[in-house]
Amino acid sequence: MPITRLTKPDSKFRLDDVSTDPPRGATKQGAAERLKELGEELLELQELMWGARTHSILIVLQGRDAAGKDGAIKNVVGALNPRGVTVSSFGVPTKEEREHDFLWRIHRQAPRAGEFAIFNRSHYEDVLVVRVHDLAPKSLWGERYGHINDFEELLAEHGTIVLKFFLHISKKEQEERLLEREENPSTAWKLNVNDWKEREHWDEYTEAYDEVFRRCSSKHAPWCIVPADAKWYRNLVVAETVAETMRDYRDGWLKTLERNGKAGREELDEYRRSRGGRNKG
Ligand code: AMP
Ligand code: MG
Image (cartoon, rainbow, N blue to C red; front, side, top):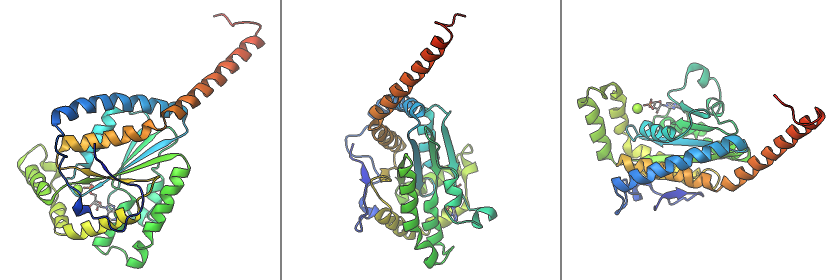
């Protein structure tokens, strides 16, 4: 699967060069089958990571309104054991949050060893919405790219596997989804006039995102640009990327589990010896 994954800064990257459509040859039927396999694999990998407690995973989801952040989260989380998964949504900062630095509220939700944390929006809003709407002076948000890179490096050094996804939809697809919400009584609760207002700033957001991808892509915290006009393909890319990334850690986690299992067995043997043979009953 040809996935756009940015693993280092790239001053020439342009979001508009990336398609929002599934690649030719990808089918909904094929995706459904693959997704089922991936679900099983993800659950198995999650159990290994949980037991080994040497790593954690942070999944950051960004995208424009109606890009499908909620749907993508539902799909990934649905495959996992909910024990050991937290989902955090970051909206307009509260008064308390505004009285701290921008990473304060984010860092508190970072995953513990063995666990998954999924972010619905993130620290990136502080160089996106804040930049587009002049919510802070440039002298302040301009420094944040560096702070973000340092922060993500810190998490990685601590064993957090950071994966960032941008759900990439076209302007036309967004319009269709927003209109659909109006027509469908079961989704009308999602209506938000703000989504239409934000849409007027489409190009400014594109610019802001371009700068994010250019400056905040690294090996330990890559950005994955997900063609998201088709929901089934979006879900497939996210699941495939998470599984592919975790797979590299599989052998290490297994070794840790074996070592811990051996240590546990030795402790048990020692205990039994001290009681003069196997303790019965
Ligand atoms: P939603 O994701 O639709 O629930 O909307 C959350 C809103 O909070 C979006 O419009 C975001 O742009 C906004 N938001 C998130 N983080 C920040 C931030 N740091 N500063 C200002 N607005 C934010
Ligand atoms: Mg919204």
